[in-house]
Length: 234
Ligand code: 1GP
Image 1 (cartoon, rainbow, N blue to C red):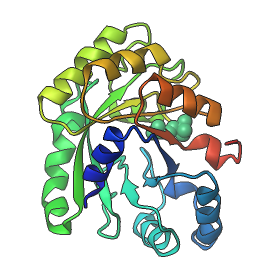
Image 2 (cartoon, protein in one colour; image 1 turned 180 degrees about the vertical axis):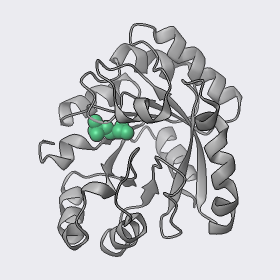
Image 3 (cartoon, rainbow, N blue to C red; image 1 turned 60 degrees about the vertical axis):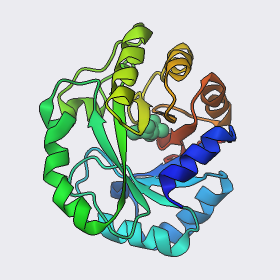
Image 4 (tube, helix red, strand yellow; image 1 turned 30 degrees about the vertical axis):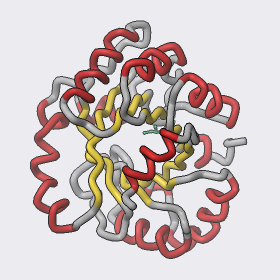
């Protein structure tokens, strides 16, 4: 059973999923057992780990310790090519298809491919679509790419569709970590109506009510990072 086949199964059964995103930069290794307990209380299905800008070098140790203390699958959500660890259960191989920066469409993936191949990690090809959220997020700045305007759902739909037609396995609608405004529910709905592959939504989601709204709009998997990090996720 792979992580991806699991996702497809849940999608078929209409079982909606939650992932808690852990930013390795904000983690103290000795606090991981407690962190894992707090994650379990959210009833999350997955732990995502990664960040678009990491300044500390303990990524692999974080993954290893998360795996040691948690039963949940740990999935790498990489911000750059250094974020690879054999200990994880899978990695989202992101292509920033909303942008026109070749480095983030294919360049970084070429750089990482040999290491990924030898790591035998499960890779899940993910069409990463950045949506404008009212402020510049780290991912937007680092990737030097423009997000899709929030009042242009048809552009998001066409982008997601192109991603699916190119053979990508997932679509991730991203408002950006700490986003002021979430991905519009109407946009989630329109994208969901047209694609068959699973849909991930994240960025600026603060509480269970908002998770539910994203699920109801069509997200198969919702990602919460900042609100959990700040102990605000209720
Ligand atoms: C960011 O979608 C994730 O990549 C989560 O965003 O930190 O705002 O929850 P938040």
